[in-house]
Length: 507
Ligand SMILES: *[C@@H]1O[C@H](CO)[C@@H](O)[C@H](O)[C@H]1NC(C)=O
Ligand SMILES: *[C@@H]1O[C@H](CO)[C@@H](O)[C@H](O)[C@H]1NC(C)=O
Ligand SMILES: *[C@@H]1O[C@H](CO)[C@@H](O)[C@H](O)[C@H]1NC(C)=O
Ligand SMILES: *[C@@H]1O[C@H](CO)[C@@H](O)[C@H](O)[C@H]1NC(C)=O
Image 1 (cartoon, protein in one colour):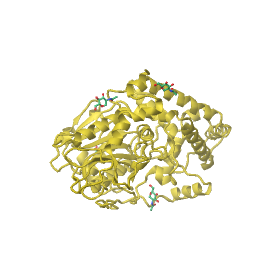
Image 2 (image 1 turned 120 degrees about the vertical axis):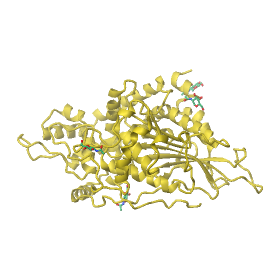
Image 3 (image 1 turned 135 degrees about the vertical axis):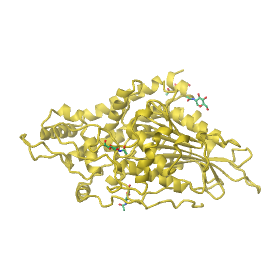
Image 4 (image 1 turned 180 degrees about the horizontal axis):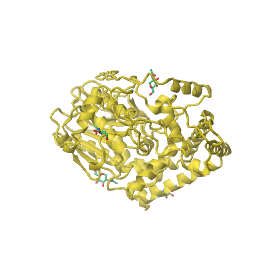
């Protein structure tokens, strides 16, 4: 394998100086053998969905995505930049040519969507300052470059969204400086990874770059930070940003009654499991008593969202406000651990029952179908005007079903600034006689191949369509053909159908 990328810039100044408080929390976590991984945020996703639904009528309610299991420490979820991230993007056998790259990201670190009643909001500054940690060498130039955003083409309603976070006291759901730095870093990692492949030529034309995002400020701003890390000082005049009203990025193919039915069944399953959990109910009651609110109000305030924010920012957990009978009492790591434990139980139950995977298959087909179409276009000879680099900026409720639909059931819950990357490669022309076993793509060039990466890790051979590929027998990469037949037909096998239409509407 030619290792064209050693692209792990550690130019990043980071937060490794996490506050003493966070260290203490980490220690505590280790002591109680607790791994506050991403799954702890699952309950939020309903709210990310609900929040979007409020703003856009046609957005569907969302279910909790599958949980995590690989994440082993809070850094994995918080994704606090620490300069040691892996980036296997851009790796291929020698002489393979990179034809296109499509990236789906989750927004970076954000302020909670909900506050726990009768407690102080976490004090976090959402203005950007290169002198505050975590910072990034590109931060200052990025801030001034974002001021030129008026020159790009924005699909409504994106033109009214601020291009950088800028509130000294963060607003609900606002991207933080950590979130900006995470995506400057992601963009820069990919820039390094692809620097020898010139997937986007230096004189790229507007057709070759596709950017789409939901209308939340955190996704718009995350996408821009990523783009700036990838193409510093890019020419705004050549950028147009498309709007996706659905968190599923399903474009014009969102109608699918069966998907909604799977979703509802999945939500009922999840609800039943939760209310049957005595320890969880008792914990919510304890927490409610501590802060002095009704249990149902506490539950509705989705405390895990807020607690994770405290954890990621090295802040102590919230306490009862002064003056009340409980002054000085605080929410505890043990309570957090119970919610987390229930979520692990939920993960197991979810994959045992399988409804989520069916939902995810129907939810993500349109996006995957579009991905496949773009790949075919980019593979045509002389495809100079085709989109060769695509960026989609979404949510955990976008990435989770995407991973599940690909059959990546072991993948960890999408942390802040998670990324999924689809690469299309062409092998060199076969000159000597080869065994030609498995050589499916004829055409003028060599064969076409796909790689899929999640947070920098090559997961191609864990996907449903390439799990059984024998990469040692002649073909070190996964043939594009496998992906195409998966997307166009095979993926529907799980719902006993052979097409999206049939799966959505029945026979
Ligand atoms: C950096 O973060 C990753 C998880 O994102 C973690 O696995 C790794 O141990 C961290 N490295 C350091 C030096 O803290
Ligand atoms: C951020 O907000 C402050 C105060 O409202 C304003 O003076 C400043 O120009 C803003 N910065 C940017 C980069 O928009
Ligand atoms: C899939 O993509 C093809 C174009 O390649 C398009 O004709 C078809 O309508 C798409 N199907 C769905 C369900 O999005
Ligand atoms: C799957 O579809 C076939 C018809 O195509 C039908 O005979 C069979 O009963 C279906 N199986 C399930 C489990 O729905």
